[in-house]
Amino acid sequence: IIGIVRVKTLGGNIKISDSKLDGTAITLGGSIVFNRVTGAVKGISPGGTVVRKDNGIASEKKREECIRIETKGGDIDINRAPNGAIVRTHGGNINIRKASRFVRGTTDNGNIDVQALNGTANLKTNGGNIFLRMVSGSTGPGEKQKSVSTLECENGNIVLILPPDLSFQVIARQVISHQNRSSKNHIYSDFPIRKRKILTAGKKKNHRYLIQNGGKQFIRFQLQNKNGYIYIKKEREP
Image 1: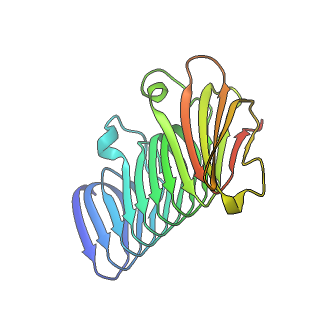
Image 2 (image 1 turned 45 degrees about the vertical axis):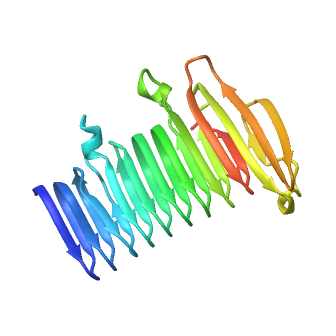
């Protein structure tokens, strides 16, 4: 099927397969499944899970064909996002297995898991963990070097896995409240920490770190964490 779709159900599930579509699919109480669907179709579910399975091939129409999903209370599960993804859930988890170009993901109370990304990330959760694994080849001319990936979480941990040959710069900021000062170190890195600074403001401590690898042309990351830990890990050789 090729065209524009506008589907809405008050309490049932929606499943769309083998199509190239624009438009919206909305369910007020069920789940949405896109199977081998390309195009700019957007899935919206206030309380159900939205699943995006095998999603075709990359397109030059970046804005038109990126995946867009929003749910107020369910999980978001995407198998592949070759043209980027913009996703938001107010109370669920976000799981993306493989993505290119960019991922913008927000959840108010859940975990964010991006297992393989070649591009930039803007990820935020107010009540969960963030896991991001960058793949080899993430550096390159143009947009990727100018853009900054941001990872923000509160009351959770950030895990960032980077290839050993990737040129990158990480600026990590942490806010540690008084009741969570039991551990002196709240950041662990397989790469050398170039600079470390700790500022005290009342009952809070602000930790700032700089981790850098490679030459002048690098991909940039900004990490912000409150009352959790940051782990920057080196990708192991297969």
